[in-house]
Image 1 (cartoon, rainbow, N blue to C red):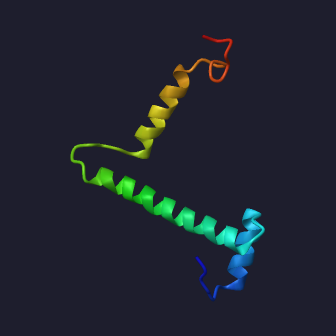
Image 2 (cartoon, helix red, strand yellow):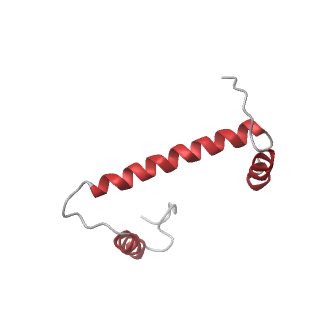
Length: 83
């Protein structure tokens, strides 16, 4: 889709430098994808607020992750010799 935009040149140049993208189109598309992903994440997180009596915090999630990591044997992930 062709669209004409009047964009802040320094923002585009800064984004291209920060990301390494070579074209304005690539950096704009990446920014739009990131914006959509952030909105989807926020919507997902907000959906937990609609549940009652469901305590969820980052500390709980970190504890779950640490527990999962502690039960995985070193070398067993992606190592076909371990069964």
